[in-house]
Image (cartoon, rainbow, N blue to C red; front, side, top):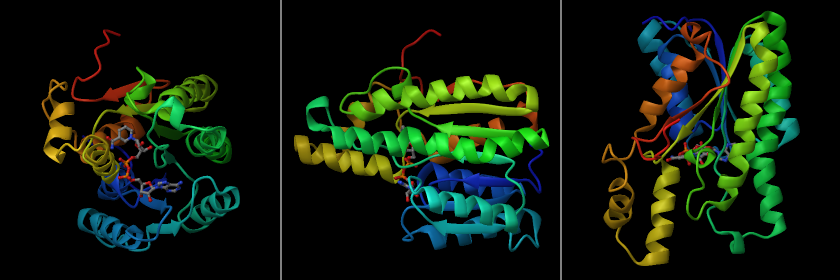
Length: 270
Ligand code: NAD
């Protein structure tokens, strides 16, 4: 299936690892120009090189179509500069993946007001900022795709993830409300809600659970997979494939949706 993404410009936030990285790789393989960023420079250069190679392997001669910057999505000036640079070097943004690290795990008693404020800035305010900066141009040009990564916590609260369970539904509401305003301009806004996937974030969650409970990593994982009909964790590339479809030309009539990717874990009829 031709997704129609060749030559288009994509902004992929929080992309040195995990879902962001997988999406950047898939976009490059489809011939898109990719601007990616991450909070730490650790893996970013390697990821940028891999993304460049994926583009070259698929299309040849695509060098220069990848841009990578270290920044925090909560840093207003850095995000604005990154978007300006992307527009100058790669062209106006056609697709955007709104993504960031998740807010810290913990229960209500673990969270003071400072933790709530920081989680709001990381999870909700950063999404609003990105949409404010990118959506007007998409509307003006009459085409655009915005996809936000949330979590199954938009559908039901997840144990020990209090901040995510409260703030992610607000991001989902933003997706829905924005899609209503943007659809007439040829811009779609959707979100994906992952369950457990095999990324470094989940590896950290496993380590924390092992510390709290004294269980082995296998025990922690089987505690989850026993309740997942697919019987396994998802792979980041599986979520990336869904995101790529939502960003494609083909998905022009699909907007305001939240698509859960969780191996059947959440039991909800509709
Ligand atoms: P990951 O830890 O594997 O990768 C996170 C990426 O985000 C890294 O590149 C990191 O540098 C970057 N990042 C983190 N905080 C940032 C910030 N403030 N500014 C800029 N970059 C930042 O994580 P992942 O599993 O890919 O998770 C991505 C999102 O999906 C998170 O919000 C996470 O909570 C959510 N999520 C993940 C799962 C899962 O099973 N992996 C499930 C549900 C939701």
